Image: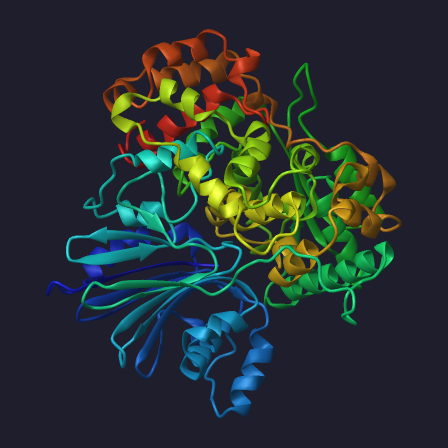
Length: 606
């Protein structure tokens, strides 16, 4: 829902609409329904609106309330309950929007208001009384918030493209971001990005920018992954009790994301367990004529290009209002550049273009969809979790080297030594990825190594992989994606469940138990597979020639990221076993996508 931007200066400069307008132009697809600006002396705010709640002009942003000015992206799912509470405290409302609830909540509770919000959000408030710009991001990082230090001030926006619109941001490659990019399959944890001049606010944090240039951050939410005391009355005592408790929490998460909208809500139906379960829970709640959408591609000799045979079973079971789209493989590569232009940061997940092309079609029918992102990470669905749990069974959970040795072999795309051999010396840094991951894994509040891993994945790694990918690709078409499996209350409950309930039956045991009898058995019992994208999965033919052209282009050679000998080895045999990562990603694609993103979004070429 929407795109936001703004600027604040402390060197005597004035904020101007002329600087906000190019930023807003780069955000227009996120909010095609309305736009607005507010400028006062050294502070300016901009907003592009996707109308979801209170479709009238009363929901227009930037929204003013006496000395407060707000721009907001996202949805506060419990806004109606908060509104009643605030009215009882004496606040009066002029709209039916969740935007106004944020303003009144801040007036009542200050920045502690963020702890009361259930939902996905990134917002900025200018407080004229305290002369402060306040920025906040939701606990799970579902909504993005970037910022860039510029001469005499700071700008912020919902995407990198808006920050780059003025041309005065440092766009040189950040070596720390580069290390993360090529080690954690394109995950660059906040505050870093691939560019030195662009930063992002960490999930579960708020930030204050003062007019004198001082910046202060605070973490307002911390996820614990520990077993609750068994003597607590509310603690589930049996396997079935855990299943029942999580079932109720998941139903509540789906219900909140359905009802907090004044427009129809659909479901992106892949044919996998997660999205199928969302449809089943909606049906269980009595929702009729559920709108569902699926996409597929042409088959390749090695695999099928669609999962229609599975999504069709869900459609038949629940009699949904369904649309499916079959995309020719010949249409994939020509549209790839559009998807890359929509990426706030370089993303190597090949299903990005699938979400991009699907969102293009879905946005013609609905403005809001639910999606299954986060279920695998919250409930232990990937094959490497079991391997990690075994490797970490006897280790000292507070010894950084021990936990890294149990994590690295199953997750890192490259060792630090390989990274040094691939990247040219001017970009070399120490092993920043191991340092970061080691510190995050050994934070207090986790009982087992699997707890440590899942918490890191849920709070950090998926934020800048599937979650960001879905936000960017859907919002490129003015489509809002809601992710019930990342409801923070559901996540907190799931993190406290015993390890064995996540690893039994190949992972996601609890979700499979909830789904049994509701979702067709064929969906539950099928092996987990990646989203089928044959045209981009196999590094051959036209796709290979495309990557080779990018990596040997004059722009790539001038940038000089990659060692030419190491790059040539990748080009000579891209499907050699050593040229795939631990989780089976193509190292050639990782390199090509990074260079392609830089050329499209920084060099503005191609």
